[in-house]
Image 1 (cartoon, rainbow, N blue to C red):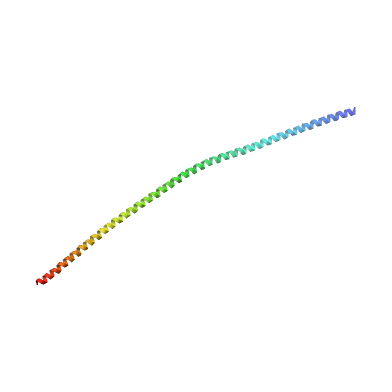
Image 2 (tube, one colour):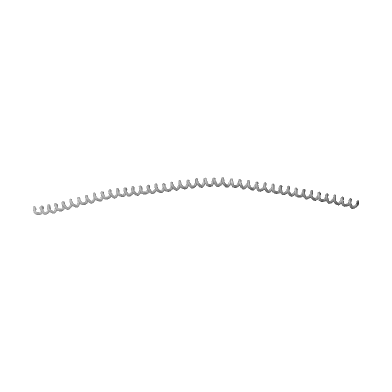
Length: 151
């Protein structure tokens, strides 16, 4: 019986050892599974946090891009308006310059015309004086000759 008893004790110890080992293995597996799931959950939370951070950053960048695009369009319109003003200013400046040149040319023409009239009047006066002098000299000559003949 001792052998039977020893055999049954050995079987009981082996069964207990097997049960304990299996229980320990299952507990370890469950702990590993829980650890894995908690690690996966923590990693998932970290990734979700990073994703939300990147999404908010992306949204901020989109808003900034929209603002920059709007400002760029506004600046482009302003620069076109300024170019138009500058062009019209240059055109008005050219027109004013042309008008001033025409006015100065007309003024010089009138001054030249006055000067020409003055010169012509002076020439006519000198011509009349010269003609009168010639006529008077001729008359004076003939008068002298007549007076000499008379005497």
